[in-house]
Image (tube, rainbow, N blue to C red; front, side, top):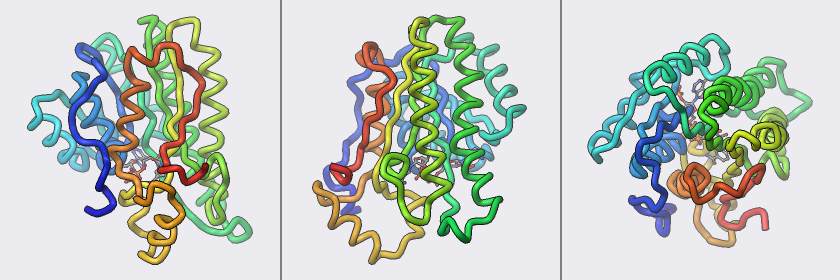
Length: 259
Ligand code: NAP
């Protein structure tokens, strides 16, 4: 793919051997790349998506590379699903070292015409979902006195984006939420950081017309659309021991789009 030229290749400098990493939205796009990356760094990856079937490709890729993966079907916005998965993972593996809240959706439309449902669904999955997993996994990390939480926001949550009032609000919410819990959890050795992707080629952006994609690419100083692996690299850094003195930070990975 032309857009991927220059994107990072396999391999990992971050050592996650013996660690358990839970990644939501692990079936495709950015979540799949994060799951594959963390597994390549040595972590046992627990993936979450709405169905197990959707995560088969992720599982195959990780197992083929000699990694470990276990999938759980859950709706990230349902507290009972979150509790079921976290209880089972804790019972099985005792500790959860890394949590990546990546699952997300868009339901775009101009604010004046936006239906309540489009607002509620996006805020529920993107913001409430992030809260529910942080609360449940945060408790497990507190008991282990160690943790790395990485929440996926968006440049839309920093700058806003016409047609995405619901999405931008949810992603801006993820930033404020993460900065707050970074302060609350710091004394227990838990860091919380945010990665804000720019335009990344996944199913989420595939729906946009080629003309728009070409215009966006033109506006990006590095002159390529992002690949899921670009995001996975930054997530791996925040997931590992080398980022131990970094918390409450937001890093945009956008090819310079917001400079
Ligand atoms: P994607 O290709 O559409 O994948 C979304 C993932 O979220 C899928 O794995 C999906 O799983 C999961 N998901 C959605 N709703 C869920 C729910 N209720 N319960 C469980 N899982 C759910 O999206 P992407 O582009 O990789 O985006 C990943 C993250 O990056 C999102 O938070 C997105 O907002 C953010 N982001 C993306 C871009 C971009 O340009 N692509 C830019 C900025 C930020 P199933 O559908 O299989 O259940």
